[in-house]
Image (tube, rainbow, N blue to C red):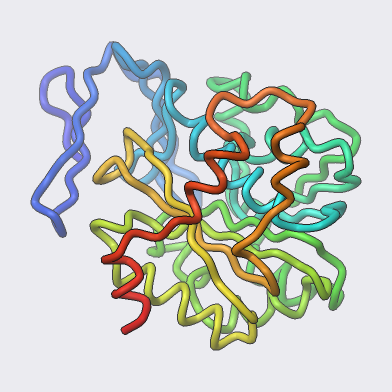
Length: 282
């Protein structure tokens, strides 16, 4: 990450490219025990959260990511009631999960309380459901929590993490996936953000292979645009007994509003590009 004049620039050296956002000014700057968090006001994308120099979210386009992480997984499960979010400190995914009336309890396990505290101050629209009685917050190590979870006690696990470096590195490893498989019920669904298919094919392969090695019966991908992430193209990886189908009728008749997710978008997101199919096959 560099600041050049009134521009924030995130470099993606693995692809010799960069993303730039024009800034109006900095709103917050905090170093927690885990990471460096900054909040900016941009000219065209609203407020911007940056962690360790990388874009986490903007007010303008975060809805795409949060809706896809939440609704793709919940409409894939036949009856999601108990949900655990690992990470997700900005609370955008939590907000979307709580739109499902059948959900009875959502636990958000975030290692860094500073992310949630700053999100509540600077992105209040993402935290408007934090007082829902079904929501519970635990600030601690997500890997340790999953390792200690009762077998079969969770219906859906959503891993809404930063990139697989630093505090999040262990969330992309087979031992963590095995612990998630144990914590999930028989029909449990796992979903994890799995980076850009164009720039991070190696990570995508690692995620799918790790999940299968951990005992998940099947994996699937869901691709979607994300304007302010490297390459503008992102993915989520699903794992479970039957992840290539979903409750399409229920998704089409959902009773809550979304800005990106629809049943048709869900169906299309499952279609895997040829180069991704080839990479995963090899």
